[in-house]
Image (tube, rainbow, N blue to C red; front, side, top):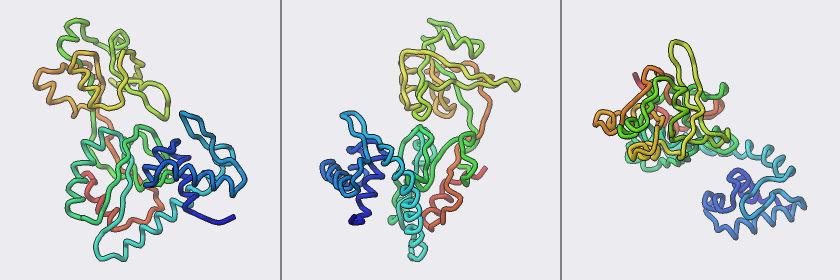
Length: 296
């Protein structure tokens, strides 16, 4: 078999993205060219690697074995190639980061725009993702998640202060429906929720008071992943939303939103930048890390 490693990279991308369209955009080729590449790889190996339907693409048993075997090795090669930047006079390279929408907007972006302006040879690619993904197999340099969500085998660096959540709605909504005095009473309200992709179900709103923890599975007409969009819906009087406190303070101060259950929303660990403990930090990554590091 002709060992064309570009074909294997193409296969990894399609299998991880679950889509020829997304993989083609990631690699920078046309969808038809990518499809031709995968067919050629399957033909040379004489085994089917991907199941294809009109709606999805997923690895076969053989494809899953190949993906689990070679993806970490290609990730290691990426890390070693990145280490070559240690020999450059100026920091350079691409840093791939996965984060949710809120941390990307409120923490990452303010730092990144200053960093890329100062270091023109550093590139930053941000993947907005609410799922808990394997950053090594999917070839990310780092991820951003809350402290309580981190894996034990990762190096974690704090990049934000402690946080609080807030339950808010438009004043007219509370006037029509009454305001809850306990988290359980939210089950009778029209709540604007969001879904965690890796867990499948709707997020259970988390509360704590005097050591007592509650997870309330609310119901409502609207489900939106973006915190910004959930706030917009609340401002329109469409229901109750549960978002980071920092996102809604200006609306509360202006009287556009009214907060409830504040005593059930204590502070908790903020966001961390995490990365594999075996990663060799290039100058570019070290600069990126130092720029994001939180200093109390």
